[in-house]
Length: 472
View 1 (tube, rainbow, N blue to C red):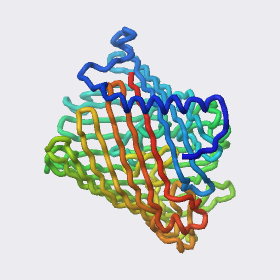
View 2 (view 1 turned 60 degrees about the vertical axis):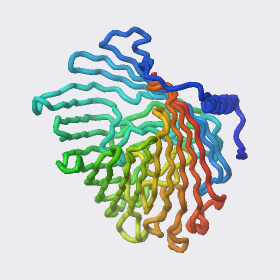
View 3 (view 1 turned 180 degrees about the vertical axis):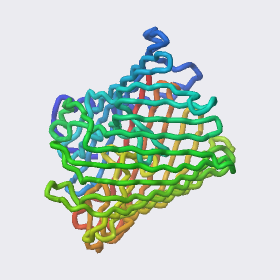
View 4 (view 1 turned 45 degrees about the vertical axis):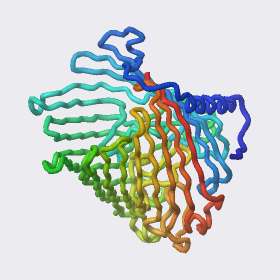
């Protein structure tokens, strides 16, 4: 790979980080054990009513052949993420605070830096959680959390605490979770999103500290209900999410007012049996065509998302598993009418469906039709590997390739984006403490990427990453 980058003192971090990752790959003599993980709380001899834990992740990413509109060349980045969580346990009450520090190095002016990569020295969570077990039945478990927090809902496609991404979504409000011994569950929350800052490239590039703020002009909430089906160990889930967005003095929005109801039917994976997942989501409401303060016209929204997969895990050595998948996220069929048809994935995660994000992330849950097949193996207790093949088409040839800025409103460039080949290797070096992961993704570009007028036409993109995560 050939790169052109700014020169600064921080650039020297790239070589030792990469060398360290490679040396871990070669250290085959280090084996996983059944020892108890090392924890900061125990090492500090903290009392039972006080806990302290955290993570540190260092990841090197490289990209050959840019695919985003308006960008060119190759790219690389070192992304560092540190979290530190302290909790005070008082009978049924837990008071918690979590700090997040996400930084980027080796970037240049062509790197797609944003608040999804950099968020320095930030209060990610600050909450009070109350244990309300038994309130709705003797065997029920529940808790109410109030304050700034991270949230996972259902399969995490619409609301998620981000895992692969270098920064994490946060919300401020109330989140209630309840479950019983028979498998029924309810989650309900009312929040305002937390806006990550800074957003200006120069400040992101310098890893400047600018504290996040609650967006009190936006309200986001929902309810999610899970119920066992009572047949073949399957479950069903129904949910509804609501978003009401407004402009503020410092931020212009598209004034989204969206209602997103959905249904999911699934069976968890287990050796020697078929597992499956079917999810169907509608989305309707109002939204403006742009974020311009001069745009005051509300357009009707009607969009949808469908996901289906079926898998099988063999009860054999290495636990081989094969999964067939299909995703369909609607696009806007007519950009000149008064209706928006592009699906909005809200605050969801996408790495587990479409591949790595970071400086990569070419595919999003919007204007997309994608079948795929994935295989997984576990050759050792502490080693897992995955390979996937997915084709990607635009759901509407008149709408943009989401996340890249590439579009052809005439529809003349067709729909086929390309085929992605992906692989991932994950090695748990010290269970509960140290994990190594490496991944590779390559896109065989399709007709749309070749013909669209604002596509960069750099050639087939190739992305790779290596990371080490320490948990303490």
